[in-house]
Image (cartoon, rainbow, N blue to C red; front, side, top):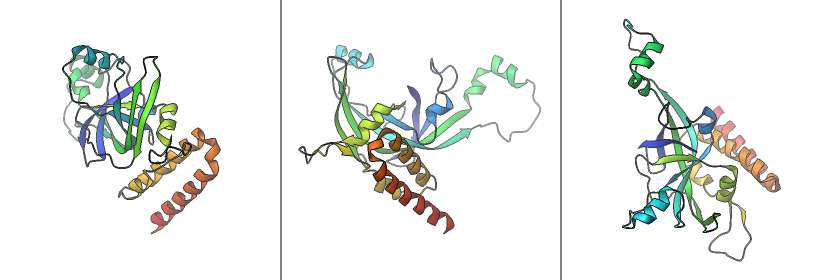
Length: 231
């Protein structure tokens, strides 16, 4: 489901997204939809073509053209209330304000911080199946645009983003890959080691056959977090 849109960026890989509020979408996102450590994706806007029928198929989800997505993880949440700290008499209570001045409620917002971990390209086959064409972990070459919508990823999409073959070695079988770990470690944010542990917890559930490997990575990050915390 779509949970919000990009409103600013702090860098090429860190984006601030505003969660949709009441009456902005048909189904308002619940807190668990933008929880800490949740995987999300953002469609990279392609150059507009001259074929109106192709554009209609894209909007309706019927297009078989490849689509590129930036895949990211939610690592922080901010509750924004512009009226906090403004003291003074109140002529209306909160219920009356919501009824007579609905724009007042729109000033409050939930902002999430998303770190981009890589890119994936997929397309819908004529039979209606989703086919993954390419996956890349690390810093993406393309940046995202203001107003781009944020979409949650289900377990199958998260599994596809982490389980793939190396394009340079097509003869090797697919394997579990976390190529964005160095990319996360290089960032200076106290929450990122915690979100890494959250990611590993999700992968342990999705890849039970790789528990031994994931447990080693998890112990290393837990140790790193303990050392950094104690100084």
